[in-house]
Image 1 (tube, rainbow, N blue to C red):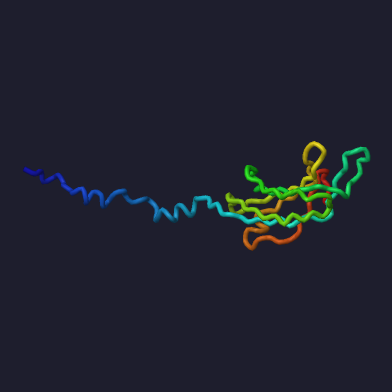
Image 2 (cartoon, one colour):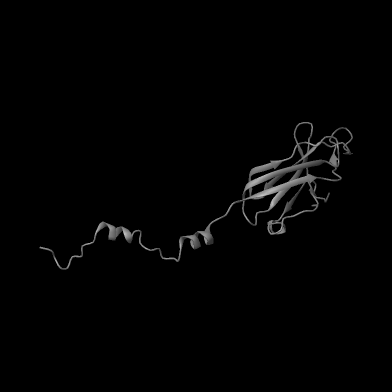
Length: 154
């Protein structure tokens, strides 16, 4: 005999209601509101003009013969660095470098640094930070002034 107080349901009826409804209007809305979207960011580094490098030899004078390269990283994520090849014997290097950051998030700032090859290790000539707000909407094309390693503009 069946108990009239017990409701019997088929497995198909139970599965049609599983999983139970979520307390928000949709998973896509929740994910869109709270997730971090990583997008590729293409970076072009054309060159530099008027680099000065302190020749740390006997004369301690600025040299017009600089072997230099440029690095670029996402300011708060320094684990991925883009780096140009070395431009030899010039204060006006032309690199024509293109690289891609795969882990860029809207608002991330980029740090560019230029190094001169020293006798034992590369020496920082200068660096500059390009805020994300300066390029995230329409990109950026232009010149940036380096802050030198000594604290003066280059």
